[in-house]
Image (cartoon, rainbow, N blue to C red; front, side, top):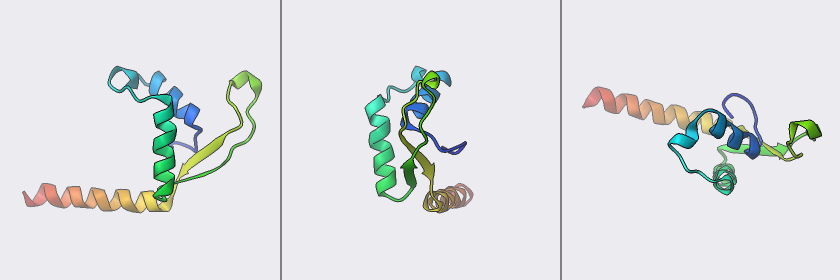
Length: 88
């Protein structure tokens, strides 16, 4: 989603094509579970996606994007890590 808004199905494809299956066993339903949790925490936002061509094999589904809250939280976390690295 940092690259572009995505369907959960596209995230599943990314996990497979990027070789992440070698080190993770996240299931398809777990992807949607995590997306829903992140949306409930206001880190992601979803909206109805456009219908995809049948040849693409993708259904018309919800597209998830990052929110500014995720960006702010990530920046705060990174700042904490940097402070911890330089104070130890």
